[in-house]
Image 1: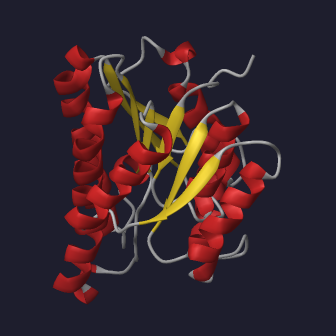
Image 2 (image 1 turned 30 degrees about the horizontal axis):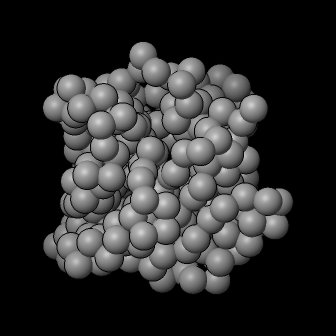
Image 3 (image 1 turned 135 degrees about the vertical axis):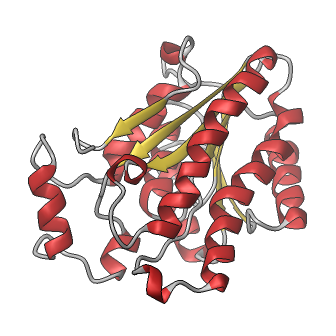
Length: 250
């Protein structure tokens, strides 16, 4: 029997990259999935089509996670479509890299609004749906919070905040039978990474690959498989953890 049969999951930022792989991974184990997206409708529809094409259940819902009204509408769709929620994956995130000299206040607010505020707004809105039986919240962080790479100060700061949110909410929501963990991903080839012009030949990528004990760059499925584990009863005694899914890079 599928490990997540009868359960409902919401994955934010699921039109591509980690989010799409996570949505498909959860669906493959039997979960019905709400595929959230901000602007990439075609990508979200593609994720839904891949899930329903093999007999799964999924719906796409547009919402900006940093907008309170959008989040309210998103949760209303979850409730009307499936009546409950068991799994929340806070995956939506934005990033740019660059030296401190190029720091812009507008970019600070963009990244913190999506990566930090968005996680808090969505998690808070989902609490009534998680109900008496509890559930699991899985935040997608980064191995960058231990790598401390030059040029990533804004993004790393947002994910450092997410690390703290994970542990605080694990304590706060534990009495409600809600587990809270994060999967801190190492560098992986996604649409976002390739859109920045990075390839296996880029110095930044070559350097990190050389420092990775398992000797390769990750892919979205590497992260999705860890998320699926945390969503199942196999992880029923796991909360407040930052699981570094980075091939050993730290």
